[in-house]
Image 1 (tube, rainbow, N blue to C red):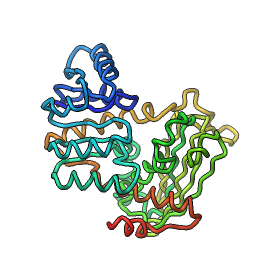
Image 2: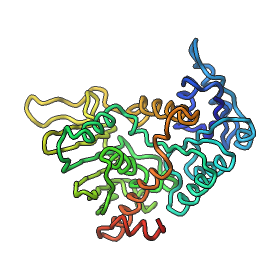
Image 3: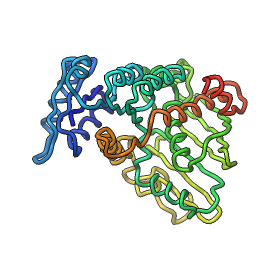
Image 4: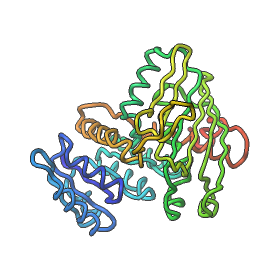
Length: 347
């Protein structure tokens, strides 16, 4: 398979390196709005190639050249603002596509891109890597098999070790759409239930640039699922102890925690309890490296027609609807039903 790869930034560099060593990938054609950056990435991956199986990697002169390069599928890891347009372009070209979340930062843009995909009948896999993390997958099996009994409470945590650069915020969609959307997707995928109503709050007591951007640096949401299960989801940009992503699932017969290991960045306050880790998780690429690689390998299989699509664009839309409801709740100070957001989007 020849894959057109779009985007040579931080996440793009990781994904391109992973794809170059993925079974089924024969060639990687890298394009970026900055041709020099694409060329530098292609050279770097080529220099890092180990002996043994490794795809041919080369740079295209432009994004247009990638689409004209006879590729069999595309991977989109470009700037967020470019996602929807590139998804639509891949659909019109009849190409299977993988795209990092989000499709777009708002519902109208998301729906326009999805309509292009559905009209073309092409495949779109969205990047929600927690679906491929070993801990989340084990927890899903435990919940779906009934081993925990009736699930009554879920607690989700996403905490960055340090804030992003100020210039990132206007491009991110805000803390809820950027970070908590992963928890919203994980809750739906893991439990098999839909979110019925949300209530969310946020605070911006850190750097001034959060307030300037109209964003928050810390947020908390209470979700009520359609079977009455209660979910709390919290996120912050200021977890100085390290990068912390966890999910606790409490049922009538058992309790399970995702993300609790020797590198989880907290210490016990109890005498004799575990101390803080010497080397806590530092960021998402480190914490979820294996999950990202598994996710991309799954895309290659799905694009080749060897496996079903593990995370369609409609799945990303459902997670965005929850994020939109939480953002409205945060701004208005009231609970928001998902049906309200869906009705306004004519879904």
